[in-house]
Length: 272
Image 1 (tube, rainbow, N blue to C red):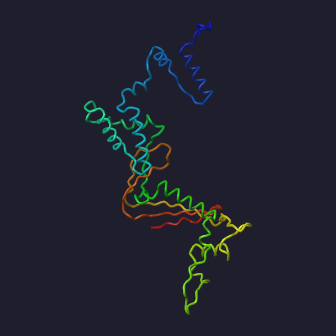
Image 2: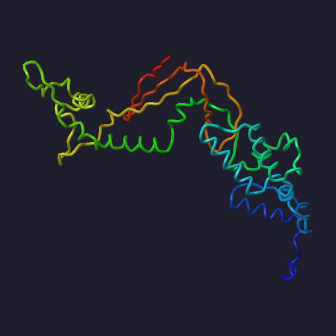
Image 3: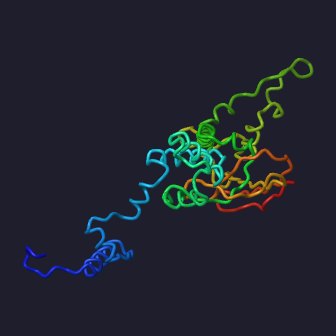
């Protein structure tokens, strides 16, 4: 400002100018303190930088802890505050030895750690997930299921059901090729749904996709009578539900909801 023969701006006016520029670009308000700006001009450091130098964990170690927390949460075994403290205490005790206090990190350390890394971590109340169901849900089974579903909806697997059913010798030694009782269950269903030919055919003789009024999607929610205690755990930020696997009793109440692709729906069914 002095080189341009203009009067230097005060620290308060500099903060106000930066606040206005930030608002015009992002439509978000920020508050800058002139005293903090003065301290930085005189060679001071930000509080967040000073606190990071006092951290028990290095940046690389903190990243490993965050990655591990997210990984186990995605598998249905989320960490509680106590379990997270145990893992951090083990890391610090191994790296720092006698320099690390025997009591471990502070009482509120895990809460401050989650707040500091709130862009990746958050806390949730657990939703019970049966251990057998948790083991059945993985990337391989999901990919195989959707590939199979796409083939069925596009009728790419109808050829295997168009083949003649296996023949069996009836009374008098005659084959019963026309007996519908020997037809596979799915082929019988398609015959009832689409007519005598079993499936719809397009102009080129190929199979048409299944019609919307014959496609139903279902979803179910299970309510366990045992092992349903909810606790506060840590998981990846942005999730709506954090499941926790448990091996409780087998008694369960299931609610099944069915909705058709054309928009119609069936009444929910409750199974005890």
